[in-house]
Image (cartoon, rainbow, N blue to C red; front, side):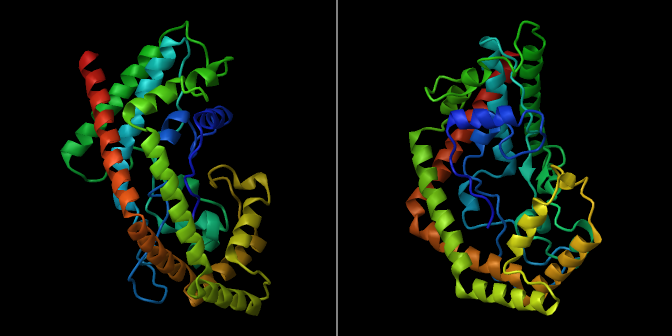
Length: 353
C-alpha cells in the first residue's frame, strides 16, 4: 500500500539525516526520530466491512477509508510515539553536546494524519474529483503530517499536560546545548560518526539502546516488516484488486487514456518537474494534468478501486497478524517498555533541571 518501514542501520540513518538537513518535513529527517519510528506501523490506511459504492463525507473525503490497520494496535499511538521521539531528541542533544557538537533536529516531531486523500494520493493519485481538480497529482505532504501542537485534539488535560512537560524538557536540553558557543555545527567533520555509526558507539546508537531498541526489537521488526510486505503484495495480486484495476483501465480507455495502473500516472507526474516542490504547496496544476486527474478520480469512483484495495489489504494484513501473533505480541510488549523508559528519561531530566 504505502512505503514499508524497513530497518535502516544507524549509519544509514545518520547519513540520511545529514543529507536532509534543512529540508523540512521528512520520514527520516533526523537520526533520532527515524529510529523511534522503526516500523511505519501506523502509516498506511486500510478499511474493512464498509458498504460498497463510493460515497463522500461533508468535507469531501471518501467515506469508509481510514488510517487503521490490524497491525496498528501493537504499536505506540501518536501521543506515545511523540513522547519517545521527544526523549530521543533530548538525549541526543545532551550526548552530542558532551562530544562537542550542536545536535540539530529538523523533523518537527510530527505524526501522520488520518486524512485518506493525503495518505493515498502520493502513491495512487487523487481519490475524488474535487481533489483532482484542486491538486492534480501533487503529493500533499503538508496534510500527510501534523505537528505536535495541531495533533493535540480536544483530549484530556492530562494528555495535554504530559505533552507539554516532555516538550519543555526537550526544549531545555536544546537551549542548554545551543547556548554553548564552543559546540561545533552539524556540518562539522565527525558529526555523523559521533551521532550514529556501525560500531554502535554514536549518541543515537546509545540513546536508542538505552530506551529499549535492542536485538530482540530489531529481530521482531524484521519479521513484522516481511509479514506486512508479503500481505500487502499478495493483496494487490488478489483477483478482486486486479479486477478493479482492470475496470479502472477500461474506464480510462473509454475516456481516451491508455494507462494500465493509476500508480503509473501518479509516479509520472511526481517526477515530471520541480514545480511539485517538497510539500506540493507550490505545485501548479496544468490543464492537461487536471484533465487526466479528473478522469482518473472518476474512474476510481466507478470501479470502487480504492475501497477494494483497502478492504482486501485489511483482510490479508489481519491474517498476517494471526500468522505472526507471537511476534506482534512481543512488539507490543517491547513498545510498552520503550515508552516507559522514555517517560522515565524525560521525568528525570525535568526534575534535575
